[in-house]
Image 1 (tube, rainbow, N blue to C red):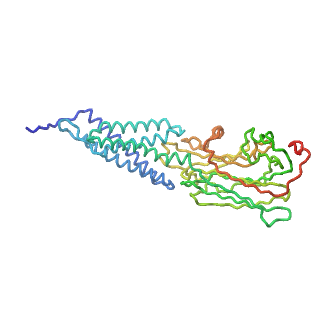
Image 2: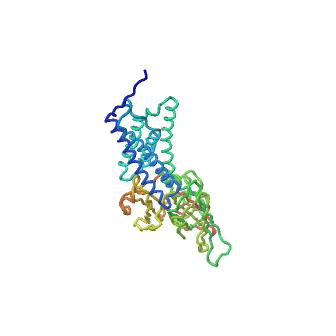
Image 3: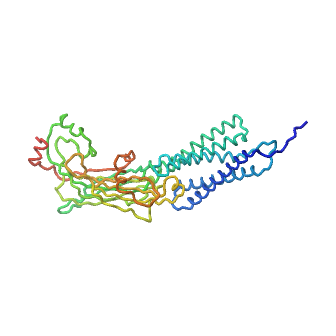
Length: 437
């Protein structure tokens, strides 16, 4: 005899559980949709921002459909044999996407120093738990076989790797990598001399060489003149070891030469910036700057020209409404504060509403010590995001620049030298000081 199916009222706890999952997916979908539509409407969000917004909208649509399907299950007054009807596959997809959003948010927030990081990390963990709980509760509806189990496992691993890859490409990499700029300089004596001055041409070439565009936040150049005098010294191990026994931040200025000596410190003849602040550099698009200098003939035996540039990924939206402000401190440094105009609601939640780029122009430490250098240098730091639109305090700025960060290694610089006048004769004090023969 055929088995008679009976319809019974579903257990109350099961209905409430399904309703809770449906409400959670609906709320998450609504939030993702609102944030995605808002961020997609922003101008200048870049490819990463556009893709992120489109992904949020797509996730919102899937979550809304899945929530509607689950609400449909709760509307049934009776179930056959008291067994819950199977849900559709899109419900399982929705829970996988919930895990994806949670993992992505976790990776985005875990290294972020913003004050809301603990709350964002906890929220991301709750999203992952929601997705895992939903897969556990509705997983049997997939009619799991060994091939399907393998497919689900691969899909789950792919979800984790995809979240990490998308986060690395659009968040971590723009904030930490990049700044790959090739910089070159040349220095040459022009033939059209003036009666008492030499005309010097300096050429600076620069371009972004990575796969991403960058924005220049600071650039410097320094032209120095040095007196070089005759001083014959034997190249013994003791004399040569003098340039290796201490820290030398500028080896080019502190070097052993057996026949001449370069007097320290060098004189600063010119200094300035060569690239516009905020200038965008697209990959492999060269830019150049020519500068003309005039130096008194016969005063300097050696000219040295050095240029340095600091760039950040162009995905960081530097403010165009408010120009950066600069303050001269009593430590021979100029600090610049550039606001980041990022109106993305998603990044506001994960990173913080107000972000700044802090620049520091180091004006050189002119002195006779080999540890000193008259060359200008510019560096930049990203202070902790905040929710109040206030510039970072003096104490927090000084703390930012206390240590050398690994990212400083990617600051490009280039230099060139040009010999001008004949080598000078040493003074009696120079002969004694350097033990010239």
